[in-house]
Length: 563
Image 1 (spheres, rainbow, N blue to C red):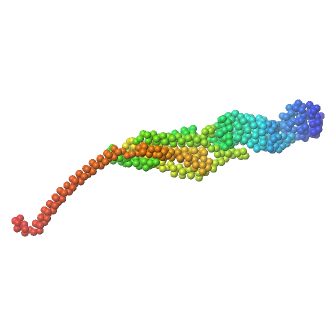
Image 2: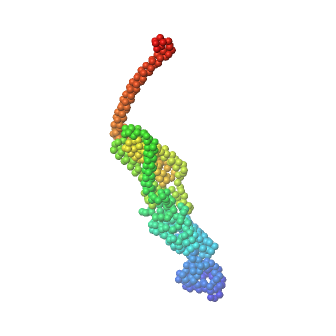
Image 3: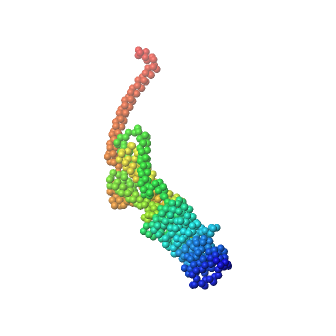
C-alpha cells in the first residue's frame, strides 16, 4: 500500500529465481498484469488485490497459481477460461489442427477457436469437430454451466465420457461421435431436460446407456453403436436410442415395427395369427358355400350313387385346378403314402419360408437376422440419411411378380374350398377339397407374406427386390420338382398315388343305367301296343261314320229297305 501507479513492469520476470512473496496489493496499478508473473515458482505468493485499474483478464498461468490472491476473481480469472485450459491440456491442444487464440494471456476465452459466448461472456458453444483432438475429455467441462452446444465429433478422444456432462442443464446438442471413447456404462443422468440431439456412434462404448427420460422424436436425435455386427461380444444396449449403428458404420432406425404396434413381439409370433386368419377365412368360405348349396339345391335327391358320381366329376375339376404336375394332386387320391408325401412337401416349404421370416426380423440387438442397415450418420453432418435406392417402381415390379405367380393358386385354392361346401358331395371328398384348398391357398399367401417382410428388411434397390422375390418364389415350385423326381424314379407307382375314379361307383352307375334303359324299352313297347289299339279303334269309327253319311245322303234307300 505505497500508492504505486502505472503498470507493473515486465522486468519483474528477472526475479523469478529469487522472489517468493510479491505483494503489490492496495495500490493504483493499472493495465495488463505481466505474463511473467505466471512463471514464478509454484510456491510463490502474489498479492494484487486492491488495484482496481488492472486490465482483464489476468495471465492464464497466474490464475492457476495457488498463491495468487485473485485466482478466484470472476473478472480477472473467469472459471470458464480455466476449465477450457484444462480441456486444452487434457486433449493435447498443442497437436490440434486449429487452436487460434487458445491460452492467450490477455484475450478473452470467447475469442478462442471453437468457443462462442453470449453477451455476458458465458460459453454457450464449444465446437471443435474434426480438429485432431486426442487425449481425454477433462471433467472440468462441468464448469461451462451455460453451455448449449457441445460438438467434439470426428476426433480421437479416448477414455470415458465424463458423467459431469449430465450436470450441464442448458445443453440441447451433444455430438461426441467418431472418437475413441470407452466405458461400460455411459450415464448422463436425468438433468438434461433441454437435450434434443445426442450422438455417440463411432466410439467403443459397451454395456448400457441408461434412459435419459427424454421424448426424442427425430431419427437422428439419439444415435449410438447399438447395432450388429459389433466389435464386441455383445453390442451396446440402448433401449431409447432412435438410431443404431454397427461396427462398419452402417445404421438403422430403431423403433416399433408394424406388428409390434399391434402388440406382437416379433414377425414369427404374428405369423401364427396370420395362419389362424387364413384358416378362419377358409372355414367361413366353406360354411357360406354349404349354406348356399343347400338353399339352391334343396329339391334335388341326394342318393348315394348320385353323390358319388358328383364327387368324381368335381374331383376331376379340382385336379385341373391343382395341376397334374404337382404332388399336391395326391391329396385327391386315396393313398396314405401320397398324403404323407404332400404333407412332408408342405412342411418343407413352410420351414424354408419360416427361415426367411426369421431373417427378416428387425431386432437390432440380434446378429442372426439378415437385416440390411441402409442408413448413414456421417462425420460431417448431424442428420442421418437413408442410402437405399429402393423406390415405388421396385415395389410395383414386386407386386406384378407376386400376382403373376401366386394369384392363380390362391384362386384355385379358394375354389376348392367352395367345392368342399357342396352338400351333394360325399364327406370324404369334401374333406379332401377343404384341406387341399386351404393348404394350396395358405402356401401361396404365406409366400406373398414372407416376400413382403423379407424385402422390407433387406432390399436396397429395385433390382434386388426382384431377385429376392424370385428366390422365395422358387420355394413354391418345390412340389413340382418333387413330383418330377418321383416320376423319374417310378412313374407307375406315382400313377397309383394319383386320383383314380372309383370303379365300384362306375359299375353301380352302369347297372342303374342298364335298368333304366330296360325300363324305358318296356315302356316304349307298351306305348306302341296302346297306339296300335287306338289306331284300330279309330279305323272302326271312321268306317261306321262313312256308312252313316251315305244313308243320310240317300233317304230313298232308307224307304226301299223299309227303314
